[in-house]
Structures are given as C-alpha cells and as structure tokens.
Length: 104
Image: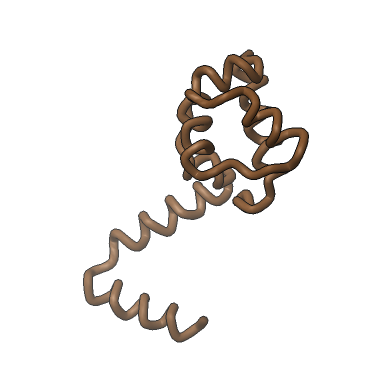
C-alpha cells in the first residue's frame, strides 16, 4: 500500500499511469478538472495533493482511490480474507473479531 503522506511515491505512480494512458500533464489536469500548475507544483516542490484532487486524478486515469493506493498483492489478500469472512456465521465473525482485538 502506498503511504498517502509520501508525496513522491504518489506522484510517481500517478505519473506512470499518466504515461501509460498517453496523457500529457496538461491533458491529465484537464481530464481531472484541476490546474496543470497543481501537478507541476506537486512534482517540483513535493507538495501533497488533497484527497479530493487525488480522487479526481484517479478517476481521470480510470481507477478509484482504493485500487490506486493498494497494490495487487494487498487487493488479492483482502479479497481472500473477505471471502473467508463472508462464509463465517455471524457468531463466528463476532468471536473472530474478539480474538483479533485481543491480539493487538
């Protein structure tokens, strides 16, 4: 999972996705409804985008914020966990949650 406080890692991933889509920085900014200057400031000064800006960029790139922040291994593991969780009875879920809380 990407650290949302690591502006460089966030920018690098957005930039790689932008290039994959064949968009210029100006094109991405226009698609996302933000100023290109915001992207340039992010790249040059290391400023961090707001979550709403990041969400708009993700939408422009054809993904959602959750999938952007998580890598494929995280998504795969969470799908497996949810699949198992959903097969448990309500009582089993309560007991499992209590067990997990006792472990942290």
